[in-house]
Length: 359
Image (tube, helix red, strand yellow):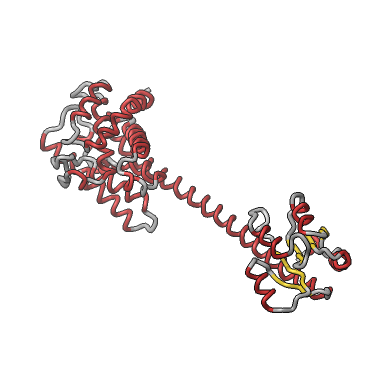
């Protein structure tokens, strides 16, 4: 250990002891002598030492009072303090240790013992600093790696979602728009403190990218049905509805083969329940009310709104006002009425998103 890099403050009202201590230590450390506790605190305004050598028996402010003041100040509380004392009783030492002293050195000084006691404390200081640096570096490495994994997960989800959308050309921009609609709804949920307990548990870094997979099961639907330029027959619609269980099965399969799959749990809920309806008339499970996961109830609003404002060969696109009125009219039947109140607050944001993505 390179002692010359360390700085000490030596506090003693006895000038002879102060000079003796400085002579013993100056070849090994940078020493700031202080003839009183008041001078110590004056010095600390300009110098933060690695260790303080503090006499106990001093006028005006003794060592015990000084260490109390040191430990009460966040700037100085971690600086180790070695008491200098001519007292030999155990009770005095215990009082000092209770106040936060790191060690005791008896006066008159023994040069080798004083240097060794200081060295031992500085080794501890050095070790603590090294551990702190290691922990901070490790935390940064973990944070960086987590960010890389998150980026990879999101890239994979986006790629898969784009593959589905590429096949179903008539829904261009749907994935992006619905994700942004969901973001607007969730931000308003948080602001209004609606379903606060549930929403507070969500990891938004995972939640919103996972919403992109809500139609992943369409990858298994025939192009004849998926790209049909006319309205689906009842039989074809039944086949189309299969995209929900197919998507759920695909996501579950990935979950079974991976250890880190928190991000897929959101996708599972969204994919499996975004076609359920508040009154129980939806599919695939006919869930009703709050039995439908909140993730699915949110996506139902985003998904239907986007379908309404999109043109198809068999229908004209709704205006924003028409789509908004249709969504609001579905409160209590198709949609969670509480979430419709949230939708009303951000419906203008929906219109803005649809225009920006369309352009």
